[in-house]
Length: 151
Image (cartoon, rainbow, N blue to C red; front, top):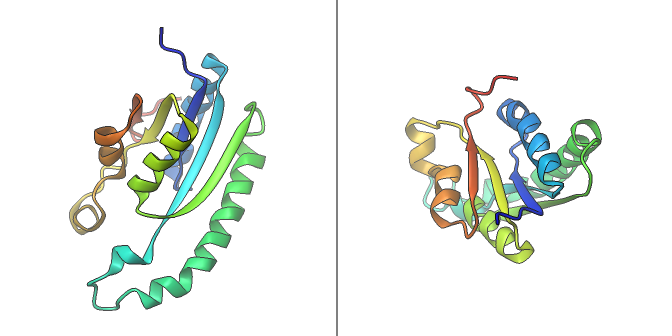
């Protein structure tokens, strides 16, 4: 039997995240599961080899962490207040690696992640987070295209 008690929703605080949020909430309620929400800030190491180097990004990392904390608190207070138990995490590092580490550490049963359809230079530089999660996750992954959601 497919027993889902822990659902992870990686967030990026974009409009695309907001489009799939109702589906995440419905799934959490349907399974009577605990919701885990993670946001990962890219680490300075991802910019090694770029002309500007990593120093410019490292200097911004604290501000990015503070902003992410505020965004997470706002998300929980304004859009997840009707969801039962929630655990949140802000991390820094490789986005896929940090999410997968969190999944293993918390014994997550299901990941719900939005697809973004990144193209061009951005996909070459960073790859697809959803694709990396799908390939490596130790649990089922539900992907949702935010541009196809009809609510």
